[in-house]
Image (cartoon, rainbow, N blue to C red; front, side, top):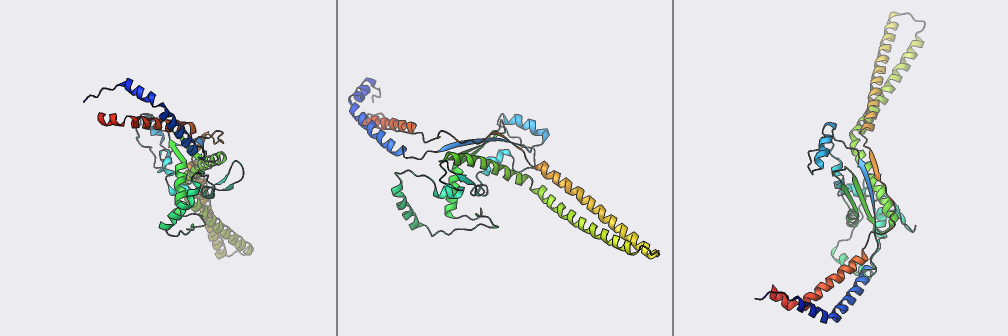
Length: 348
């Protein structure tokens, strides 16, 4: 079987079929433009922060050096949520649910609502698909049970443990619009947010950065805050007991001013000792309370903002010219394969 390629013949055939290519290119260009031009624009905003590391000082430098070679020797800390795991938080339903109540506002000022309502009711669609949306909803309703709104618990709007079908779908869309990456070499967290409106995009990026900080801070200080609440309660009780003993001692002392009985002196001494003991307890609890307050501050992580959120000026996509160029290239390849289909069969 002769498998030599005759480039001269190929070029001659392509040249002679120029009208076909012009026809294919024209049709492809028109159809590509009809599809891509109505596609909603989207914008992208990035925020970069450098979180405080919870790793131990004696292994911090070694771990940082090893990370340059892609080696993870552990973070040297008992902290379960360290910067390497921050991107995984964005896969957590509980974390995303906390974003649904963020207040957003569009650039034109026509929409000002929470993020959940914005994603549910104010997303732009390709106008070519609008006539088919009612049909899609009708077909979906035939195979789906009637959905009931699931209320949240403990005063919250949504319950991460049990979500409705609509809320689950919106959460999946949000997870696609938000990307979080961690750099092993620089220990920098980068949050990238994509949205159809530039102002909403910037507001979300800044709010998500703050939500991440609050989420990590709440975790890192949880044990310390529990201790603080506990010692605050003990201190309050100790103060009340001391005040009660002090007032009781003062009242008895005033009533026994002109009494010189030995039994009265002994009782006053006992009451004074009891008052002093309660004062010592109150002092000890006050010291523990101050230590607990310092511990909360010590465990509160610091985040250094390296790149703040800004309203994007130019849209990030869709790349209309690139899309049309790719379609023209694919159409050209398809046409060439069609013209030489017999030769391709023989070749393969």
